[in-house]
Length: 470
Ligand code: UDX
Ligand code: UDX
Image (cartoon, rainbow, N blue to C red; front, side, top):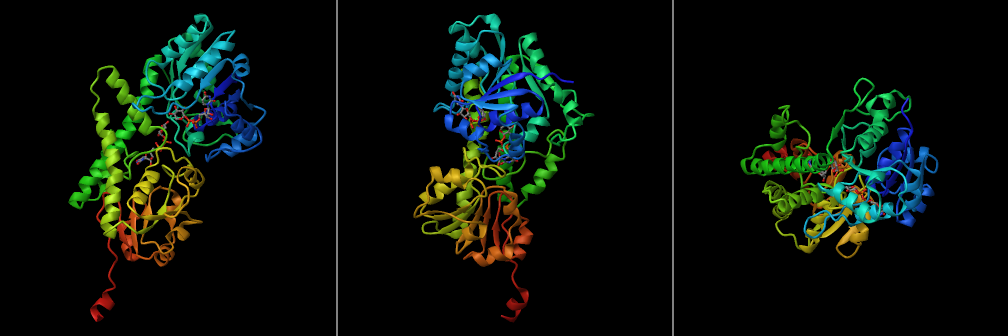
């Protein structure tokens, strides 16, 4: 039977909140600290601040008992054995990760640290951050024997974060201290021993008693690099297939067939080969920039990452060009937009290519009617409703009398539209799909001009009888 460990998680955002409830689900006692009082009160009161599968269920189970929400980091520091730092590490103007929140947390921990603690970097941070955290603690008068800093990067995808946490491909622990490494192994032992998967009410996923996740022990710096390198590699895979999709468009080939053909090679693998309007979200854009910046500072030529970013930016401009070529002129056009979140299954709009495309289209003189099942509230805060921006009640309301329909986010419900109803609602039967949610042949049969990514344009099937008669 695994031991229950006392854990503090600092930051109750997309990563911290998921980590907190998942640690509780694994049997640990957790305090989740956030300096945003309103957020903490809302969490204590029963609100679920983000759209994430299984989160309401786990919060319902552990809120205010096995997971306590507080604002006092000193109290949390005194109570726990390990402190997971999960505050944001946004991108600064130079592309570097802005680590000022991490530093602020380290300094605050220093003020109340009186017995040995393991401080864990959970946020994505550049290599050497563990050394900076140690230095910050020492500068604030903490004895070096009272703490260790380890790196335990998260690999959570928004939308599936809870399952990703409890059924990880791997758990990476970067530690230069045996004592700290051992504590992290104990924390994850309900997963690595398979014990969790034996539980009757466990959240199901790909791991099992027979196949528990592996735990990889590395040096702290290696773990920090693993996180950045993983995200940069995945972003590179997406930019690669986006570049290939442009080649397919130029040659009338089909990128779906090409992706399948290359993805079946087990050395390449089929995942993250979906072309589209470019990657977004809180991680890929910022992590690619931060990794590039780290390389630059170390004098290493990693211009491959600059190309990855360039292709990603270009993908949005190419999408606008497709809309223009489908509609001739953009000025004055009414466009229905389905999707504002940076991907399906989330309400997150950070670095969303969909939102950027909407802004570009408004600048071109279009008026937009948009719908998203979860991200409209957040989008309204940065893009208020007005003369050229309307938030629709549902997909068909957005389409009502629009000159064309644009699909920008891969929500499942956008792949299951009632095509007859869509055709009736739209003024012109034109769909520009940035996520390849439909089969082009089906769309021509339903009478649409269908423009997608890396596949030949589909035109409406002409009614042969009437054309012969006509
Ligand atoms: C995370 C990671 O931290 C980031 O490194 C990773 O790359 C993406 O995901 P996320 O959970 O999405 O960030 O951040 P956010 O939703 O902004 O949540 C951070 C939380 O930390 C907020 O609730 C904020 O109030 C809190 N915070 C911030 C503190 O409690 N203290 C601070 O000093 C700063
Ligand atoms: C990512 C990583 O997957 C995760 O391991 C890390 O911890 C955090 O960052 P997330 O940002 O939630 O997770 O989303 P992800 O599913 O990776 O998608 C990122 C972006 O890439 C989205 O905009 C998505 O639409 C896009 N994408 C993804 C593609 O365009 N094509 C693909 O094949 C896959």
